[in-house]
Image (cartoon, rainbow, N blue to C red; front, side):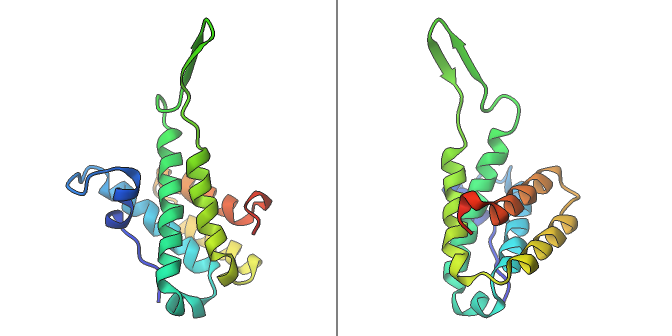
Length: 151
């Protein structure tokens, strides 16, 4: 059973009203890439037996990934400092924490790291048509392999 998350799962977490459809395609693209990476990382036996937990972790990962993607856009996280006063400068720590929490939740259910990395790279290749999705999968692969996330 494959993990399935959509814009309807993620929009409330990123503060987008459900009636707003402007970002649905972009959010669904990220959700598809994250779900593929999660499915590749999690032992297939748990995709059914722990499906609800896997889905919640995938929603955390997708939400954090979307927030980072938004903050990477020009104009969203710039900082201005003058005369000892600093304005702006949103950081990505909260989003990184969501991604970290999602992968930490999945840690007991992960399959072999080498197989998971290869499958995530395959998901990246499949989703490479979208620039936003491409950077999303890069972030996802980084999160899977980073010692910072304790996996």
